Length: 214
Image 1 (spheres, rainbow, N blue to C red):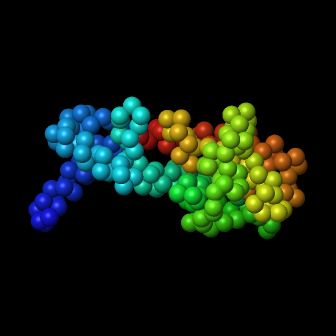
Image 2: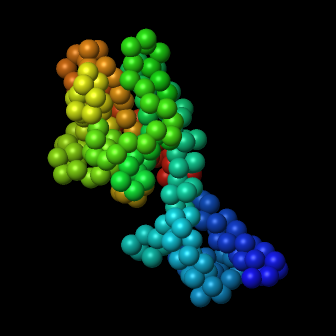
Image 3: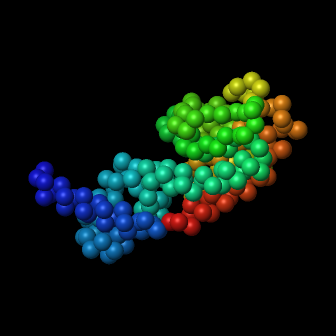
């Protein structure tokens, strides 16, 4: 591929990404916005979907994919995680799924000396932990989310530690999980009973803020 051809291809890709910055679109709508032919817009959108730069909805609409979702969630989520940490006193984290693992993309540690903590970038195997159960769509976890809005883990991954997680949604799809992790010695009842309501409120705010930016 010549340099001029490569540059032209990059220019077309940039047009498509710019067109989807604040919303979703079909291939024909992308063609109208970008000035590309419908066949070219459709072909490029499908290629970008293969590499997770775009996501294709069941309706046929295209939207920005996981590679953009992560950075946007980090930016949007950090302030909400900090507020949740300050409200509950416990470590607040944001997790996404990557293959058979979950990856921490944002974390605000508890200020207390005894705390549960993992660094940003930490990767844990699914389905362990409340976020792992949620992101692997464990049947029991999904039933808990349906009933309570959250799923908890009580000393299952690490003895003495517990957590409660709630989904971050985009168009009813779970794209991430927000988690509070804590020593069980500080729980009055359980992670979910103590902090589930505050966690669900924060998850809703992040979901709404993320969707509002699209």
